[in-house]
Structure formats: structure tokens, C-alpha cells
Image 1 (cartoon, each protein chain N blue to C red):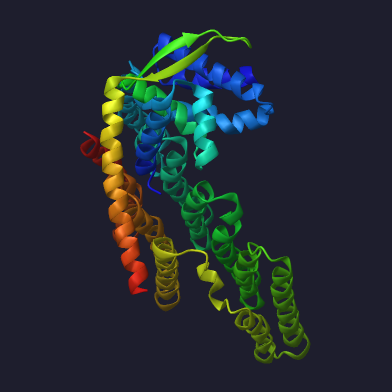
Image 2: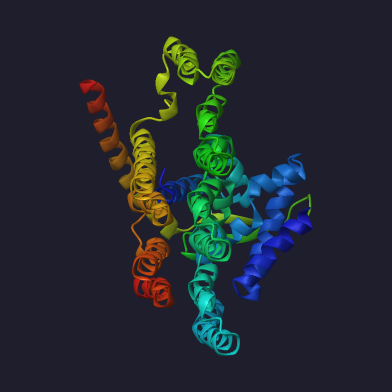
Length: 365
Length: 107
């Protein structure tokens, strides 16, 4: 275990192109830390947790290293990708008549830049719009599934949540998106809009699981289950969905009795955290409303999904240092898609993706 | 809490505990984590960074249990820096408590 830890640390430091003497110095220090920790009777696993993941440790050490060639090698690769993309693009175009979707190779430019210049977690989040666009276009052009393929764009906030939320809260945080996906798929393919909407009840049902009092959890869950069964029974047996809906008064009453009807706001959050949560929930509600509004009123499903891109954008603007580099993947997707969709400029609108490395270079120099 | 802010506080705490007596890496981690919730991942990088800035000197001492240990010793520059941080921190805390007290009175 110790050797594995140290060799993983060494590999990561070597990837940063740190000098040999520095790597040896750090690895020796960590070996000491490891042994000292073990000598207090800790298991390997405990020591591993205590010292932190070796990869992360290496990242924490970056600013103490004298990096030699790392940047220049990365920059060379990034500098080459536009030319490579151009060559591949022409080969695909002239020899195989694949101008479209051959232009997609230009996505390699921002993708390479993101992959080489960001840490793993941020990189995955930044890449998610590209993956979603590509998946969307393949499903759209290839299988004419513009609807419900737009659901892949929900992956963008989902990926971000999965990587940035504590395990305990992940299910609650992700449940609205999963519910939307399940709801739309059930509705679209099986015309089960009703009672398909019941999946949204999974959001509070999962939320309550975080409550520490077991009996309270059981009462809440039982109230939900009873009301759902009642609703389905009334609906399917007597066709009385509306009377069946009265059953949902039960969990509401339980909520009022416990005095925490506001549990979805997570009453443990206070001050800024609380207003942040309220703010983000509002953004999600507004985005969803815009999406549904445009979709139902103007049949704009094909473009309305872009409203969901505002969720991570607003989060970046409101809670992070405003960096255009972080926002550009989203802006590029909007520019690319809107120019293409509304003006039929797909053959040229991919140029929007070139804005990402350009902005990154301008902002970071 | 803002990571940068937390790192600054940790730097000050590490300077402060090593000021009292020289310590080896693991000792610092143990001492810190006994008092505050600290991501151990950040302690060693801070030790290394501060050593790089000349706030600590290091020397190696043999032990009974195995490989020799690297000890960290605060330098004069380190002491100066610590005094500076401590002064800033106490003024800051004073202000914060004053404000918090104000909130309590209003509430």
C-alpha cells in the first residue's frame, strides 16, 4: 500500500515535469509521513485518507515546484491541434464528402485545450457541453430524435453536481434532473404523462432520507407511499384522478405537523448558504419554466433546452470568480446552436468554438 | 469557507505551533487535526511552501524506529511573518466579533 501510494505520487509529479531532485525530496518526505502515521497504529486505509489522495496531494504541491517543460509541451500540443483538425477536416471533406459532420473535428481544439489545462474535475465539467452537443447532433441528425435527445443537455448540470456534491446529498441534488428525464421519456414514448409525473415525488422522498430521526423518515415515506397508492387506485379503478389527488394532502399534513413544510429549502442551511440554495432553486425553476414555456407555447423543444445552460452559467457567475474561460463553453454552445438552428449556419457556426481557446489565451496572459 | 482564506489561517497556525518547538511533518498534522478540522492533504504542501519562502529551516535527525526524520524549525523571517499575521488576524477577529455582537443585539 505504501509503495502504491508513493509510486502514484511520483507518477503524478513526473507528469508535471518536476525536477528529479524535487520529486525525490517530496517522495522521501511522504514516505516518512506514511511511516510515522503507521507507527501510531493506523491501518493503510486510514493513513491513505489522512495523507489524502496522492494525485490531489501532487496538485496541491504544484506551486511549490519548479516546473520545467510542462507548459511548453502542453502548449505545443495545443498549438498543433488546429492544424491537425484542419487536415482531418479536409480529408473527410474532399475524400469522403463528409463536410458535415466532419466540422466536428474542430471541437478537438477546445477539447484539447480544456483537457490539458484544467484539473480533472473541472475538465470533465467543461467538456460536458461538448459531449452533450455531439451526442445531441448524432441523435438528431442520425436518428431524427431532436426530441427527446435534448435531455442529454441535462447531463451538464448533472455532471457538475455529481462531481461537486457530497455523497450524502448527491441523490437529492440529482433527483430533479433524473425525474425530468424519466418523466419526459415516459410521456413521450408511453404517453404516461399522468401518472408519470409522480416521479417528481422522488425529490422530497429522497430529501427526507437525510433526516436523522428514523421514525420521522418512516412516517413521511409512509405518507407518500399511501398517497401515491391512493392516487393510482382512484385513478385506475374509478378514473377519478382528481379525487385521488386529494390523497396528497396526507404528506402535506404530516409536513405541517412536523412544522417543516419548508424542508425542500433544507432548513439546516443558514445565512448565505441558505440564500444561495434558494437562489439556485429559483434559477432552476425559471430555466425549466422558460424551457417548458417555449416548448409548449411555440413547440420550440429543439432550441428551448438551451435554457438549461443558464443553470451552470449563473452558478459560475454568482458563486465563482467570474472567468470568461469557464463561461465560454456554454456561450459557444449557444452561439453555435442558435446560429445554426435559426439561420441555418451550422456549416460556419462551429467557429464559435474557436472562441473558447481564444478567450482562454486572452484571459490567462 | 473560502479555501484561500482557510489556507492563510492554516499557514499561521502551522507557523505558530512550530514556533514553540521544532516538529516533524506528521507531528504537525496530528497537532493541527487534534484542534481543528483540517484537510491533511494541505498541511505538507504548506510546510513545503513556507520552507521555500524561507520561513522554516529543515534539518534531519536520526530516530530509533527507522528512517531519519526531517524537522522543521522556524526562522527569524518566519517569526516576523507570524507576528505580522497574528496582528492582522486579531484585528480582523475583533472586528468580526464586534459585528457579530451587533447582529445579536439587533436580533
